[in-house]
Length: 317
Image (cartoon, rainbow, N blue to C red; front, side, top):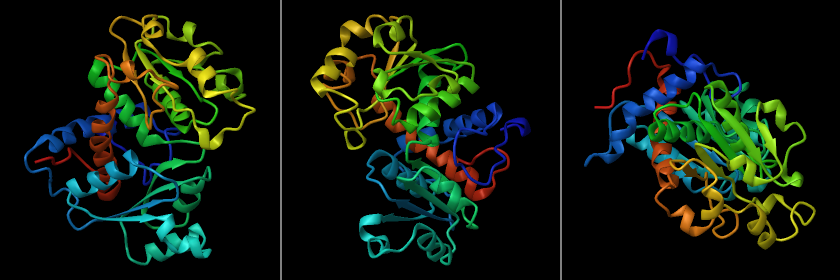
């Protein structure tokens, strides 16, 4: 890793504020860690003696598990805390929870919270490095990084790609973080959603905005479908999921509008038969499981950078 590409932040709170070289630094470090998961012994001593706490106030499968695996494959001590089994159910505030955890001297706190800005609030008040694992409808930086990692491995580059991000853009922190990262890296971003699921200031993220999916797919290199977030929706946003599937679901006919070698992505969890047809999700052009695999490597890179105040190349052997 060159000096110019070194990551210089104490926390990873969002893509906003990262320089292009810093994004490249994380992606390059993730390449160094990628093959660790494919070895017979899936562990390196890089973070031996370090402690990572995963503090999740929202449900998660991929993000929480991959952060846990990332820490353990780096030989860190990893503690997982779910809000349902923590003192938060007794009324303890987020700040008090973090202050109590800080008294146990963790090196990194990975936080997922339903309130936008929660990781920023904590980062200003703790000695530990903080990673934003998703905050409300704000950002999900490691998801955008693993998505970029997957695109770069599949396409060989990010610059010049046309990426269509389709679905519930309004509620999607994934869409926001991806738009910020991809625009920084020289890609063209398209948002496609029903008008009720488009944020008012979507253009401010530098994306082209469509209220129909077909024109957004035309000539796209990457098609990223977003989950219909039923837990954040009410009847005012969508008539029915069947109607949504008919007008905005990705099927083989719609995918044919993209480039012949376009890849299909989804941050998960999928609503099969709603935003994506199962035949497309499981088809030859899908890299959805590649995204999941990439998540471990990218989160290894992030933990390494923050826990060690990384200098030089990562040690993956």
